[in-house]
Image (tube, rainbow, N blue to C red; front, side, top):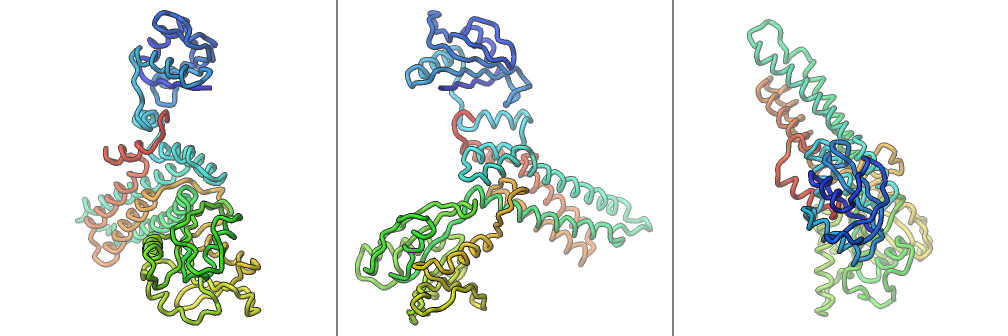
Length: 428
């Protein structure tokens, strides 16, 4: 089956000329779709949704035909000849946003639902579409508004005997707001992970077990494993699910000095991937004592976990350790001992848990915006506690309110809208 969806004021005139029969709103009609000579192009189902009770808030006409490239192209040409035009990517949802049928966070959740790769991400996208995320943001904005009103009163009645800034009400309200922002930020971060996934790079010397670990996590032979050092020369990517968490596993060339030009290029690409990773698993052969230079060759700002492999050769138990240098995991990829410690560590390192009943879908821009909003509120608290500067407190809260409003689209720019909706597929 093929579907053509039309939105706008021309829906009713197009339906009249295309179908030649009246359409009852929100009722399925079996009809012939006619060309300019009133010959049937196809027969199918026509649905008419008059404004404002439609997805876009405009008149919508939906034509469900039998499908097939030629038939659908003939029907599409006929609709365009009657006055319609091809939609831009995301234009239907953009019109729904502009007509106040959805806010911006809900509109983005439509695309997230379509692109979902796990059941958890589908459910979180549905919650955002239903307005769960937006409601939390609106509550924060309301609290900011109430605080701003109270502070404005302090500014307007500065000569009165009542000291609004010192009575503790504003400070208590700001502290509560910061705590709520932190909680929502953590939930949004988990929603972002459900949508985008976590990027994990496997690094280390040749024959440390990187490709074997990739195969173990993927559950199939995704990489070639041999005893020959330097088997992996290029970047190898595998997408997996870890208890509902999408994960991008990247196997890289072994890190060592090499005169081979092909291997040198593979090592350069490995370093590029390491710099972009959410997490780097540094694979180390537990029998190899010469690994001091390996850590120093890696960027200082990368989240690295040392994974000591081949504990079966030393009859050592699987374990996870924390020390000043970070996390160390001892395991055997060959026997599987300790792999559960690694998978749990990966989930915990990004704050992911299996309970996603309250998680909503979120994007990197949402997380950044929440962080920026919290920073403005924290700056307001510092101004209040150290300077009692009511004007500066009010300004920081105004900036926080404006920042958070970008999430729902109450305050936004045309450039941001264009970027968001251009990522949608045609017809949404």
